[in-house]
Image 1 (cartoon, one colour):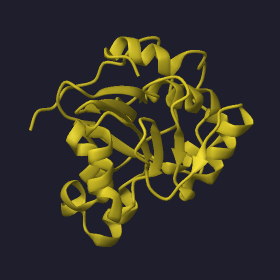
Image 2: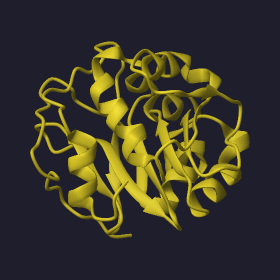
Image 3: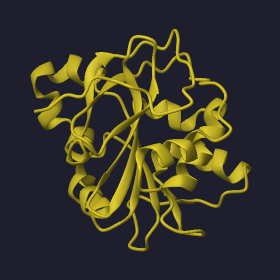
Image 4: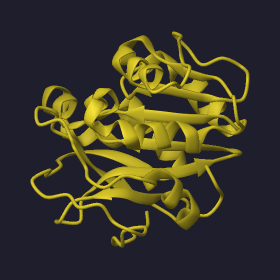
Length: 208
């Protein structure tokens, strides 16, 4: 992904004319903190549902439900995502076993990907869900050293089971994405009206 939000947004959205989100996947609203993160998908209520950021020498793209990463209707965006995140042409694209449908979408479009349990050492892209507690430290270091991460998940269901007060600090997805200024909240995201923006959408900037 390129270095400025404007350039990166254009890469991510090239050829994307609509947001065909899966109806049964209720996303979480994303909270963006700081200057490195920027919104990619925003609904008509101003809720961020996809965001990009960077940490160390690497980059990451956060999607507010893992189902979005396995939905064929979002194939144009997913192809842009792995292409834009890739640090170099031909860099390996690795996919966690929980996202086998993403691997199929990529392969059906001519993009080679490999199913792996954990990210490898070469510079590349790792795609995973936001629920892998055992990989938190590894994923943070992976991005910090110049790799890229495509991660998807929601926090509202786990919050309903384990408590809302610990979503920011205890949810494994947030332990990873928060280093880049992105938090997956326990607030449901509204998908009734989402339009494709021609430039980086404007949202309120929060500071902590």
